[in-house]
Length: 469
Ligand code: SF4
Image 1 (tube, rainbow, N blue to C red):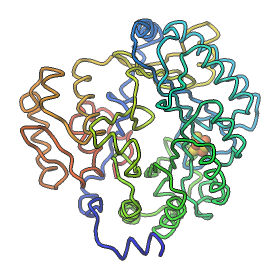
Image 2: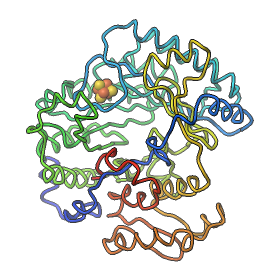
Image 3: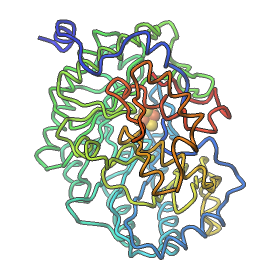
Image 4: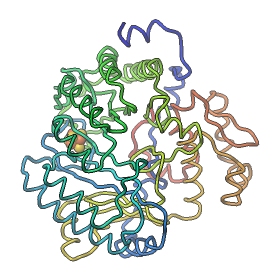
């Protein structure tokens, strides 16, 4: 029986979404990979400010997270909203690599190389646009300047475009220390793939996943998108059938936001080929049910994981964390972003590198950090950021923990927010008690909405966010 047939023939699950709730809570809102969100960063915060934070971070003993942005892609996916450079010129990556190595050196001089790197993530763009020798050179540069870990508990992940790797390349990545792979799948239907200009075969994906298992990658995750052109419930359920058969530990299911004025590649998508809001709603309901039936738990914010996955275990234990790379089990307190447009969170600040390649290169030519903007968190930001993280990760905010950590009474300091949560209580999304705030099973799907109640900057950029559902 297909996933679609099974989903249609079985009774409701705790994660099935009532349509009227989806309509009510489908509003524009952040994904809260940070608080304040990147839209609040300003140019008042610059390279000197970030340099001070990095120097201060040198004294810390806790681990570090590193994110490396590799922006190149060979072909343009029409749905793309990422910071990338589409080129077939291998020299472009070579030039970038030399500047990236300069940045690595500059940053490591400030932080020292003592702190163990618990987390490393290569994102893009397409990290595997780099040749084997370029990947080796980059990892060696990181290892020369930072304390790269060989602990089994490290989380070293890389985003994989299946069209750019072979089983041999996966073996190389494993040898370089990566233990987690994130495959960009999006949709397995040939017509949908044509419509988004991203054609890749399920047979090749299956082969790669088999190789990844043989090389003992600890975790495999797939990125999927719903709401794409030519997609419908049938194509989505076939995609989910294909994906579930490969047994990834984690699945991210994002909603496609069609914003051609902001993201020019999307102008290649014909509006009339997009599913309607009602169809998207049906797809989300169907996908939630199919994934729940297949044993995936919705941990929140578009992420589904197998019940025995580390993220699910951590969430049940109240220890899940979240940063720009999404959910994590072992997040270090400081995250250093390297490469064009990457974002760092160090001490009390966020700092973002130049988004434009030439500006990024120019700063490094002058031996300066390529920081373009950022912000210093206020105490109120710290408190609200903590609340949002607790709700987004662990589905619970403890009044006691808030009091102990910040000396604040939830009922007094956030009386207005608790009042606004009352309608969430009536809709069965959260439960309020003296112990704190508990997100319910149904509320997992509306986590972004719950977090938005505590976001004091929400009205600053109402038109810049994607829809929550
Ligand atoms: S979606 Fe990913 S692979 Fe496609 S163009 Fe954008 S960054 Fe590149």
